[in-house]
Length: 431
Ligand code: BJ8
Image (cartoon, rainbow, N blue to C red; front, side):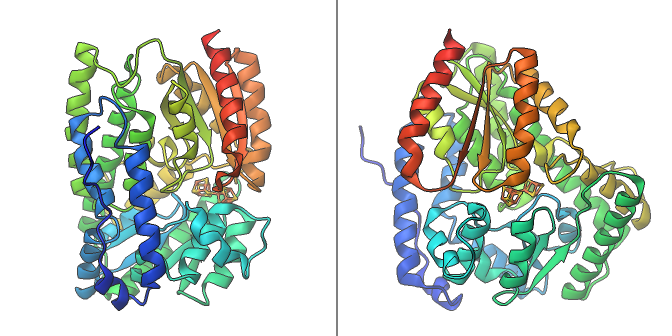
């Protein structure tokens, strides 16, 4: 195999200016480059248009941060988030950047465990640890963080995180009745006020309408990508699709949509002529459950290394983020916020009760993606997903869908055991 020149580019001076632990962070940079090269660049028959997304990873700690610093210099807001409930349209309407913060790596967990309990969700610990250890340039760049009250681990951690970076919290309702929507609408209005406050600019109806279109276009591009993955043989690997979904949370949205659409043009051609990344007879798996923040590629890598392909992610990194759009026809701020709130209320996170729409949605996506089995993935200590898993399993039993449920964290310790279970699951599909 030809030697690859892949590198995650270092920006030590900029990191120093951002008050980061440069020496330590540089080790993570090297590690990310090695893992990426091994997991991504060795995949056979990748679409040529993945080059843009490879470049995004190589510039993940540099160019995009520079762009965000430019935005800040101009007095526009840079807001960090951890949940797809935070309405990014409002930030974009203010000319700002909404960025999903890091929370998918084992490397930052020891920093968090110096203060947080060990037995909470790894995503929460990882995110907190990135800030505490000063090892995430995104965390060091944001004006403030917007958290939410989706789960106990998150909502209590925001109080502690606020000591390190200004952290505001939106109250997410836990049910979907009329009064819950009314509460959520008030929260969205407060969020808009806060963003306006930071940038000292009033968001107009024209601003918000434009932002709604920008983010709708991003979501439409991701919907198009998802639909193409139904092709057999699969025109793109699940790992590559997951990577694109992860990049959606930090790339500039107009450019990102354009690049995803260019990739989709290539995939359309592939589907037409029957070119795939894997043989058409390979097992097709849908992954459902908790989100996988970058660089959490563990489960997809295990599935695809075992000779199968992932064809859909029913999670907040996947379809839950982009399946719903906002009505673009409204011309007043009040009406726009109303339809925006409607769209966000459709997100079927397991923090809601009841949440049976999610079970119907999983079955729909299973059929649409032409999957042959469902792997339910839950992060350790995520009570809502772990318990909702019961209903997902029951639905799969009723529908005769091959099913595997796994609970995992970011450490490599359970890789051997997961591999054995995934191989047995794939045998069941093949059988
Ligand atoms: S809308 S899924 S992004 S909350 S996995 S931190 S719930 S203990 S991530 Fe999520 Fe918003 Fe819901 Fe989506 Fe808590 Fe569970 Fe951890 Fe979670």
